[in-house]
Length: 161
Image (cartoon, rainbow, N blue to C red):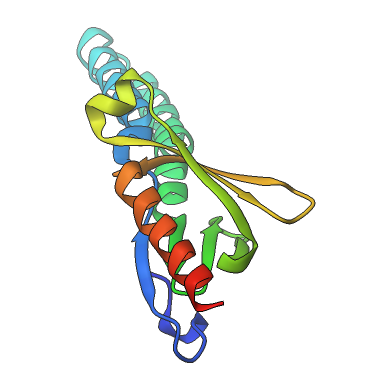
């Protein structure tokens, strides 16, 4: 989950390293249960051995696409806040990243819906001085703590200048 130390500059330290909340996996894992149940029902109810093989092959393909892919995407994505910048990384085959120097961040806010509050996560919205304007990080665990730590970093950077 943590960013590779070789990607950090001299004197830069990781303050927060996280990924999206595991709640994003609830849908794929529920689908996994349904797909396995379909395979078992066909196995028990139908006597044709050839049909069993076809159904299980389809179940395996569906599991790989609708369960395996989201899990790999979740594992490959990370959000890191260092003493100097915000680093986002995601992608399985093609890696994409976004770095925002802390000095360019102008506002940090969060949003928590009812389900988010029950699960302890939320969306972090970071406004910066770029043309993109805002970076949205969905489903961040302990979003209030992350926002406070980021604000502390921003205020300590302002105090140094």
